[in-house]
Length: 441
Image (cartoon, rainbow, N blue to C red; front, side, top):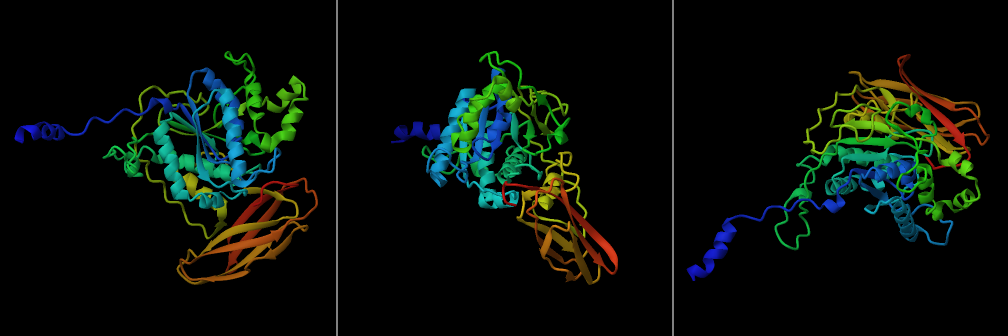
């Protein structure tokens, strides 16, 4: 009996077999992290270019866009999401992108990044994005700019940028989501994933803001007029051809494109791709090529230095604007472009809600008076004019007003002021653009 059991006992004493190397079928040079099918359109001409340079591009969608409209049939909700997933898989296949991943976030039509993050269950969603960074091991992450601008300003776009940035900072940390990194202990393991920490080297952003001039010199710019050596077509046309699969959302526009001349098509699609540099773990120049300094050696994870403690202001804008003040500080992104005065675009005649934070930073009780200034065509509907606070007490406030239905061409300014003891303790300004449609606040 001793002889029969000796070999198994010795084999067990030798320890487990070495871990297998990662599956290189899924190794990415660029991982694009976006919210909806069709979001890739903003950078698809650039993706076609780097594919010609034999880079590996993969795309992660955080929703299926099931809250969109359907110009092709009656399908809505989850059925529309299934249609849009198939549309974008076909679109990306024409560019040469096969590795496409989807998470199960809910398409959230608003401009508020906090609503999107909440509906997606922020912590759970972050774990999933970190998993995909560790699984695909990208050299570069490309995503929506996390910021609040006049433009489409989709909260889901912003949330994709937030989550991609958080994953960039966390995926290399071996203490984060350890079950992803733990070695499987049985053949049919269902909990421990066997991944490895991974630190991407760079992160870049792109934006749907109306004013693209503000992004000049914030990162590399790529012409889309160059001819693809593999397709013998300009990159703008490859992007346009890929876009033509998004019929549920853009059927009328796509059919109209087919009736335009090549010059008219190029006028629509010929703008260069402007990227904004986020941060890098290798030495680079801000406007240099995306792959500048990448090399072939992985970079080690280095815990970020703690950010400086931001001063507490007695009176400030809250909501998504306040969130980005903290987010950019915490993630070392204070150089990212941002509106000099906070801004938003809303539909003419819609209500505007201005979230505020009021805090008593003194050592004694204080009574504050609030005032709101708006153009004469606006109606201030609700706010709290007098607030008493104990030392250190903080209170959220909300100013609600109704915008005019007239077509105002210029940006409107809303000003909220807090005073105490005859002294101004804080002023909040918000620029508002009125438009004929768009996402709700």
